[in-house]
Amino acid sequence: QVKLVESGGGLVQPGGSLRLSCAASESIFGFQVMAWYRQSPGKEREWVGAIRPNGLTDYPDSAKGRFTISKDNRKNMMYLQMNSLKSEDTAVYYCKAARGFADFWGQGTQVTVSQ
Image (cartoon, rainbow, N blue to C red; front, side, top):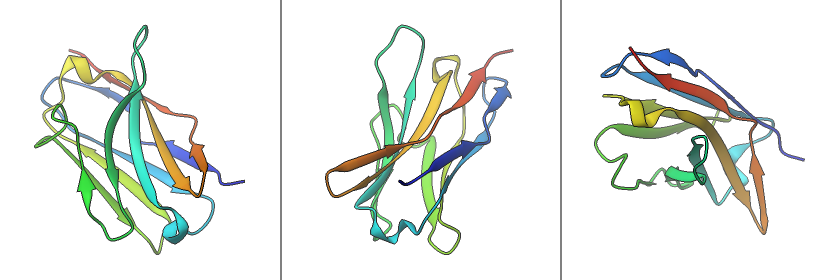
């Protein structure tokens, strides 16, 4: 069973930045895709962006230009750099890895954007 652990969340002021990390318990080479999602209270889980094994990334319009996903294959890590944060970015952020027909999720890390 793959284990994913997110870290790096916290409280940040509007306009600030945070870098989230996702640590995988095994090599990330075998994942078809790794992704970040977020969920706010009362809302459905929302896709934030994804990265392919070749390093290509994709983002929804809400994240383009502000969020950047990267990975370090040697460390089995994925990252989410978030800049120009807004109050509406407040959510629990989750990482996900897909392999075959299986999806693996982390437990989430809280990001709060507030004065």
